Image 1 (cartoon, one colour):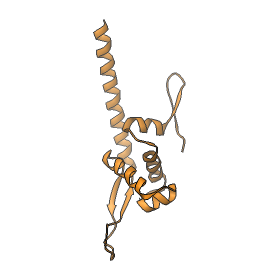
Image 2 (cartoon, rainbow, N blue to C red):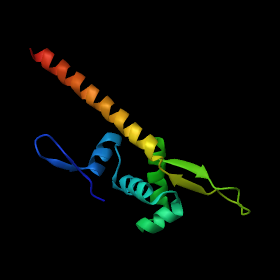
Image 3 (tube, one colour):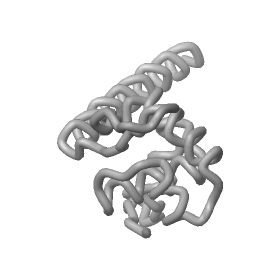
Image 4 (cartoon, one colour):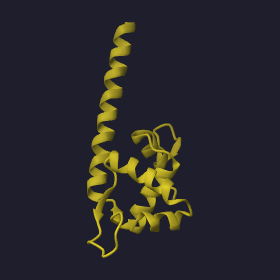
Length: 123
């Protein structure tokens, strides 16, 4: 689960740390996102089983990822049983890569503008 990004000064950071910073994600959200990226579509029960955590903590992580637009869900065809519907969660990689690219460019632009403003105020 370790992909490293290298800064111009030689420091390295794990890609998961970058995503955590960019989207305000915690460890469980990062684990769920990584699992869906590597394993494909899964139900919350399957995710909980794979990560060996409670379904409640998975649902919280999934809701955060859904709110951030990093994960999508689809309802499983109507089942004969009553109760809550079952959903499958997944990542559309092409969409996610584009989203990360756009959000990173937006962050870079904002940082650049703020630095420009800060430096011009001190001149």
